Structure formats: C-alpha cells, structure tokens
Length: 280
Image 1 (cartoon, rainbow, N blue to C red):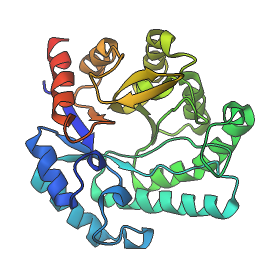
Image 2 (image 1 turned 45 degrees about the vertical axis):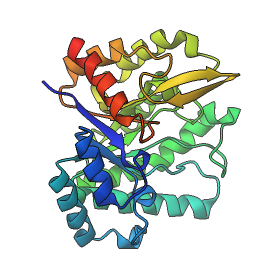
Image 3 (image 1 turned 30 degrees about the horizontal axis):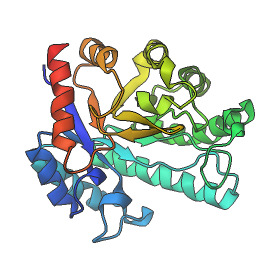
Image 4 (image 1 turned 30 degrees about the vertical axis):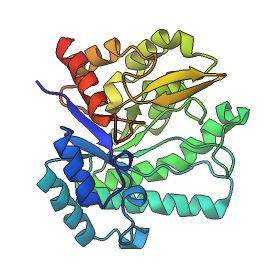
C-alpha cells in the first residue's frame, strides 16, 4: 500500500500551472493542494471565471499529470465583522464549491477565521461568541456543499476560532452534516504555550476527530525565540509516528499534503515521510 503524498502547488518554483504539475509528478507527488489565485496568473481565476469549461480544462491538465486535486483551497474569513467583506467571502466559497463539483477536487478547504477584518489572533477568537458567529456563517456554506455533492473541510488552527480538537468536535456536532469534515494539520494546533504537550494534543485530536479527517497536512516546526516557525517535514521537532500509524491503519490512500516546503527541499521532505510510512 503506497502513501498518497502531495504538495501545495504554490510551494513549487513559480511557473505556469502545467509546469508546476510536471515538476510535482517528477518529484513523485500523487496529489496537490490547489489555491487558484496563488498558482494562476496568466489568466483570470475570479469567481466569474470558474465556469464548467474552465473546470474541465483544469481537470484534464491534472489527469494528464496523474495528480489528484486533494484540496481546492479557499481560505477566507467566515467571521469577518465587515458585512460587505463577509458577503464577498461567502460568495467566493459558493463559487469554489460549485467549481469543485466539476473539477473533481477531494475537498474545498478552509481555516476558521477571526473576529476582526485583519484575520489576526486576538483573545476573543477563542470565545463562545466567536464560535457562534463562525457556526452561523458556516451552516449555509455547508448546506450548499451538500447540494453540490462536495466535501467542505475545516482546518483547526490555534490562533483562529476553531483552535482545539474539542472546539472542532463542537462545530461538527453543531452543523451535523456528513459533508463537513476535517483537514488535520497537527502543527496548526500548536503554539508556544502548548507545544511541549504536543503528544497529548495530537492523541486527543486523532481520538476526537479521526473518523471525520478527510485530508492530512504534514509540516514541521522550530522554536525560534518565543514563536513556533513552520518548516518542511523532517527539519524540526515533530514526531510523526502516531500520525503515520493512524494514517496507515485507519485512512488508507488518504490525501496527505506537505506544507512549508521550498523547491530545494520538497523532494527530500516527501522521501522522509514516505520512509517513516514504509517502516510503520
């Protein structure tokens, strides 16, 4: 059984999308994280450009490279207090969900926002009020995903509204839809205040969220001063053994995408994780 390892396509050397896919395939990647605005500059990727024809064109391009679209990234703020900005964000989510239904993407992926226009951490992000705002705005987006037959996946991040495994479980239960699932990025659950307790946090996350995990993100981290700085897999302090065992035993062929690589270390990061998987 092989591991479906992928990469964020915008982490590859800047080039037209078709060339990025060729590079990813040559480096042994099986899937990719596609953020349209970050990898397409030679033509429009605006909401109005996301036509069935464009979806079919991209789908053929990915099929030619034999690379799955693991995640169609649409990382916007569903708790933006600016009503106009929030409406624009919601419209973009719907456009991306509709596009994903034609594109054949595994999930439409997002983080979980902040209660300010800057999309930055503040203590109120972790409040019950913030959670209620996020859930209220999330529900109609997930309802649309249900209509379009698309999986919408949220990615818990410590500095955002859904900051812990317990909080993510609350969201899943409150929305109550099989089309709402989880992108699990263990490093994103960590912060300078809790990283030394990471084994417990990751174990809890797998226990609480495991059945709803649709995609796994893999990166590493280094402690620099009083901050955690993300880096490519194998270059920091992460121990991936429990995560790899979970993937191998319970999530065969799940899409696993690397993050925070650069062109010179992407292939090495893939090989590092593949070797851990092979030995697990």
